Length: 207
Image (cartoon, rainbow, N blue to C red; front, side, top):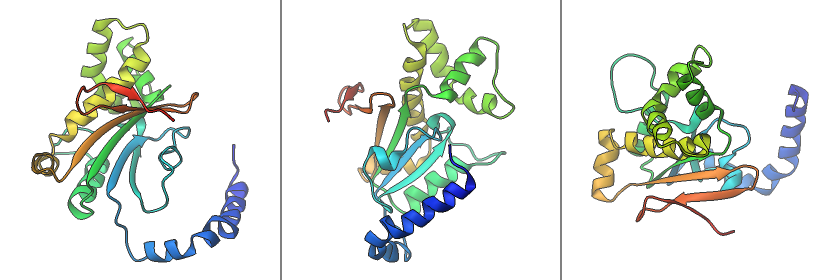
């Protein structure tokens, strides 16, 4: 746990260390960004994309939200934070890859399962995780031993499907300019599973 003062001390350590080592990189990044990967991850503090993929500043365009969800394309009503980030990444930055990364022990997925048991969580969380309803109901109908983990994987699949409802995504996928990928990170073990484009199955990446 960190206090505001510890955050400030962390910044000072960053200035003395990482920034000094990468000052030239930061000067270049100050003129603009050019990542070729968009990564949509959970807001969970334990699954940090830059650490998991050993990425330097400027290499990943990261969007984080509860349960790493992508809503389907729609233009009416509401706020569209995920859709706006997606549009910018694809049409302005012209990223070549989009990765949806789920993780073990996801609280958003747990909230979806809780709602299925007539116990919705939160004023804003419950409506948001309704995006998982269809995937959750399918998972529960299949009666897996571990519905939490099964839905974490199924949620990645659901978001990949929703990505394809955006015209600017589907058009670029069809033309070969954009590729979509799924991943899942086991926090306790530090292991990454990557969705095979050929089989659609999540396979453990050997360290």
